[in-house]
Amino acid sequence: MKTLILLIILTIFSHLLASDSHWEGAIVEKMLQSMSKDKKPVICSKGTHLNNVIKSMENVQVTDDCKKADFVLADKELVNKSCKRPKIVFSYSDYRNCSNAVGVFFWQKGRPTIRFSSKRLRHFGLEVKGELSKFVSSKG
Image (cartoon, rainbow, N blue to C red; front, side):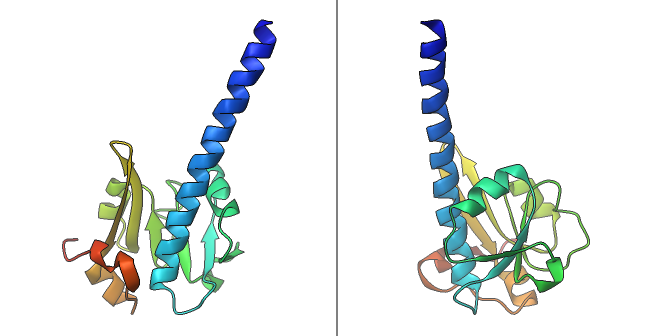
């Protein structure tokens, strides 16, 4: 009986985690498409958490070669690597400290938070189009 209850709880918990990855993927995909000149941007990413996020994205191409990527999705392990492509990071401190971070997506008080840096976007010749343009900040 205890095993059955534990199995039910684990199943529910795994669905909740998958659902979060789905929403994160949808938001990050929207961020990438709002900056990209291509309909299907090429991204480079590594990390267990980001692999789950990428699985839910339909309109991106994934590569292991940073030089072939349009953007890098950077978890803690990729933030300070030598890849000079524009990055989307997942913590505000990484956004402040990484000069290639053009955008950030993170959860704050249970709500998704998005921010883009106008200075860094200009540096890479990028522009945020559409409904996400209101999240472009001239600070940092």
